[in-house]
Picture (cartoon, rainbow, N blue to C red):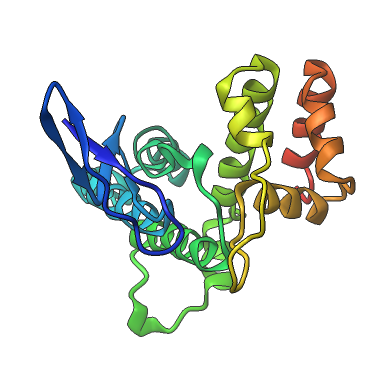
Length: 223
């Protein structure tokens, strides 16, 4: 049995006992396959998911890089067996610019491997997408999963809703404010023409049809 203390700065040392047995304090916790660190950041988990997805890609190398198969078939294999591994748990990621860059680089890595384009050929990412005749979709898929997750959490009106919408009293600590999950999602919505305040987002989720219509709109934005 272990306990985990979440803290933005250095995690305080705690002594907890159950039946006179001291519970070990962990620096990270594996919850349903996702690693939760004591600083609650998700960058290490994203790195781990990328590594696992690339490993899964390598196991399917004889299919994904087989030029006797059409690109359509290979993309379907990629969507069915590789991307789900990468996006597992992505509903809870607070996506910063660094994390976005890592995910987009991974997406291009898959395409380069499938088309056998070595880095030494100095082919830019835009040309890789053009050769594959596809557009970037990884970030959009992750965001859509997050929006569906948000709607589910808010309409459930449980403890998860309170954790998502609640406010902590007192002054915040010094230093640059972190990119929160809600701020990240809200910024992505604004990029796609959905301009309203956070309260408006929360209120809209309670109308299931309206929320799903909005998700369909942002999913098709720019395509």
